[in-house]
Image 1 (cartoon, helix red, strand yellow):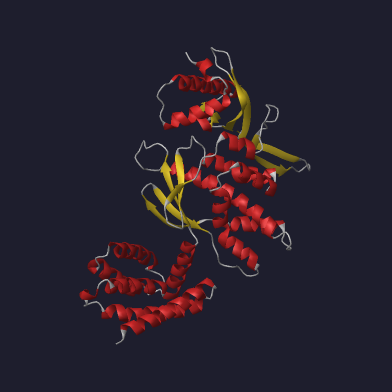
Image 2 (cartoon, rainbow, N blue to C red):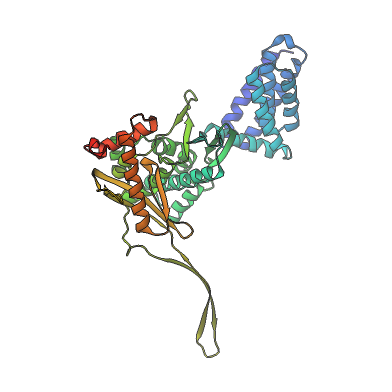
Length: 440
């Protein structure tokens, strides 16, 4: 037996199989991976009783395990996985074999062809994945992330991503004959798939489907395949410097910018209960996305202000309708529910207090206001991590202004400040010319 020669043949078949899988030629990929797995298995088994040939033995066992997974030969893959976990000393290889075992268990009850197809689909998805991590802003419960944080991130991330996908689709198909329904279908297909998760805070990776459907234009398939990567690079990690904002406003309409970036202001708000990081593909170091400050929000987003007259009322009704013998139609309301829900901005240039003269600001600041029928009005100024809930709008606005006033006075008079307070105080000095006049 010539192990090196057989191993090289296995690698050649594996390379050709990968190419076939990328080209969506799954039947060819399946046959080639099966050949590669059978050859590599022979070589790995040859080294079973040769511990003196480390690390070669461990490397070949790992290779045989993964090639058998790719070929859908799950039982065979598990033989190499268990042998490696019991006999390999290299910690990295053992960690990779543990990952392989997790995958093998998930594919255990599938046929060989289905398991092979599923594994190779997942492998390509993982190659296209963006790796994120959520961590709590304040470690009240250690590094644990709540389901509420995950829900908030996923909801706003998805709104922003789908809006970006819709805008990008319109641009790339401007010279093609695509209907509005096709655009909506593309937005639906922009559906991030979770390709991995682990804990140490909350780490996860996502990618979008890459398989072309019958009749899909190649440009559309390529866009669909890379939409999350483009969004991550162009939108999600955008630092929103002045030049970035200028480029965005030249390239997108006000409505598109609002739909893409407004959800991100919630994810990247200073008062968000979590922070989002990602892993750089070059060196896999963790990088946290920058927060969106009040100045950036003012420059980028169209201000959505509503007067009391503009605030409408949504009503959900169940009405029973039937036609009488006389020909008249009888309608009876069985259930009616008022659904008051909206969100808007409020710009202010004065901060009022119940007991003191107002503070005049150098520039307007933007308050975020949302309402739902359960909790009432939630008013916040994310840059100062100030938030209040009230059932009455004007009362809530007055109380928020009073909180802002008190926080400014507190920071102006505090001699020793922590890093967060120093950042807030730097912002205060931009808003107020003479902070010394507020000292007590």
